[in-house]
Amino acid sequence: MCEETAGDAAGRPVAYTIDGQGPAVVLLHAIGLDRSVWDPYRERLAAGHTVLAVDLPGHGGSAPLDDVELSAMAASVAAVLRHAGVAAAQVVGVSMGGMVAQLLAVAEPELVSALVLCATACTFPDAARAALRERGRAARETGMAGVTETTIERWFSPEGRTGSVAGQVRALLARQDPGYFAACWDAISRLDVAAGLAALDLPVLVFTGDADISLPPDAAETLARTGRDTTTVTVAGGWHLGAYEHPEPYRDAIEAFLATLPTHPSGTALG
Image 1: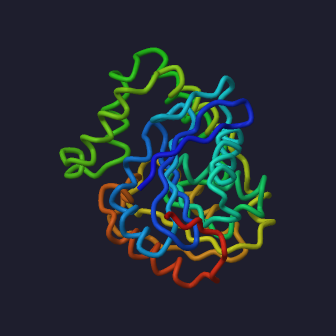
Image 2 (image 1 turned 90 degrees about the vertical axis):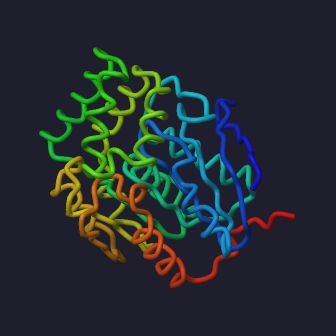
């Protein structure tokens, strides 16, 4: 595994790791986290793929954006692909990472050969947008200490909240700047990429968890029926961050999905 840093259009550093060889797979994390949450996936996928796990701007080792927009995050991921010499990638995203993945595919479709979207949305009803902005307001008013446990309760099952993955997520959230965290929620509340996603002609795998209380059910349903070539997997007992809490069913389905895709000369072999 190699630690790398790309520069975005403004010269800000975007940190990522690259591992393996073969068709490229990009992994994009949820709000407030970093690429380390993908460790249970990275080694398995790297057996047959070039795996790039990216810290989105303002997370992990990547510099924050001056004006936080999901489209700017997507541009940062594009900069990573170009820095790594990747022609096109299969992009996997959870929650906010899935939104960034969609925006990347719409803005630069030549860079994306397939999408895997976990616990995410392509648009929201107005009531949900207000609720998302409220999450940002709470972070600004109380700091990360005031919102971390309510976030964990939305994201993990009751038993999962005491596990090691939730502990890792708590630690990552504690390191986040509350103002930037809030700005990310505001950016999420503005998401509307449904029309752009519907116009794409690429395979899409959508995961929904039937216990996900963080994502409005109608938002998940809209995403599932928007893409032209969409396969939907409903994970029984899956909470919002089920892909991290219980990676096995997600990882197995992702590997099976990737195995069906045409071989694309998109990977970068590591010597």
